[in-house]
Image 1 (spheres, helix red, strand yellow):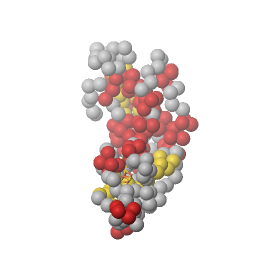
Image 2: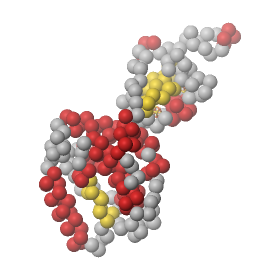
Image 3: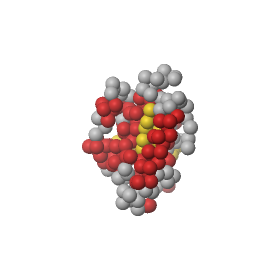
Length: 245
Ligand code: SF4
Ligand code: SF4
């Protein structure tokens, strides 16, 4: 069990990490809507995020009933016990994670790894919807559709540095939030796709005169240029500025 002060602190990554660690279910208990102790309305954030999470669970073949969010105030001890018993019974009925869904261990593991890796990207792409605060719980349930989640995963973007265009200005490497770009002075820069969280910063900051960062949607990026071919040999400035050989 993880105790957090506010449901608004619960992140998609906490939930999928719990499933990846073999938890059969995740329960989130929060203050009733309108009764937020911190006036941050974190419970609305949690409600929105849980609906997104359930759609992703459906997409990867996990029963969304393994995730439950309930409003329970600190004075509702009996209700808390009833809700927890009910959730526990539901999980017993569902059985071990993946089994009742017909997913073998490796398949489940790779699906959860894929989702965990894409969480920063998912949060970025869905940031506008994640900020929505509709009036009713029914409206929250309609924020995300199965079709858009399918599209989200089938058109995942990737970024690639065109070795013919990169001028090793190093801006992208300095701005990358997760140090996913390898490079240095006079070295063609390369994105480590395993580390990249697809934030798009490199695409934004690469100077337009170089436009070396390319965006791919739903298709694999070319392999990185070999390390021994990354040195940029510049012509003399007198003869032609900083163009590559
Ligand atoms: S998309 Fe973001 S995380 Fe990926 S390499 Fe570019 S700056 Fe780094
Ligand atoms: S910002 Fe563009 S030109 Fe500069 S190092 Fe990165 S990819 Fe290369």
